[in-house]
Length: 143
Image (cartoon, rainbow, N blue to C red; front, side):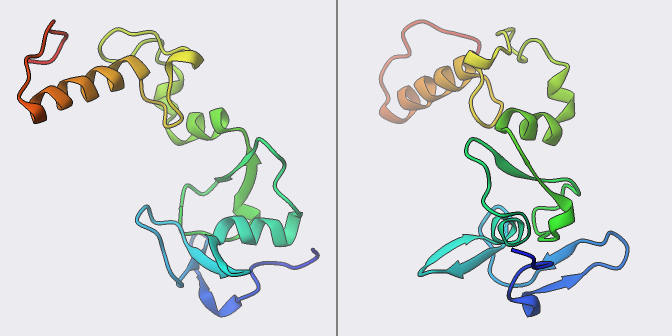
């Protein structure tokens, strides 16, 4: 603790306009920086947050306040609940009460990424029937 940022300072560069510390080391397929630590690979933004603020509280995840997944600036990172992180990432979804197919957007019907469980289940069912060539049985809302 007491550090001002990631240990490997040479692995990021500061964006002059936004103040983001852009990770220039390895990345995963979703744009998040990755760093080797203790024989395993971890998310660079999580390591940067922990070096300044200590361990991430259980049940919380790190939100990029700047909305830049590649940023490791601890002042741009905040520990929040998954629900809050999803709400901030997709603010238009916060006002929606139903998905585009009319299913309620309640906590028990939402997956971790904010998609409707009923729609996801039906899409997987139809995909299975398309791939196997078996009959579709009852039709839902897909052609």
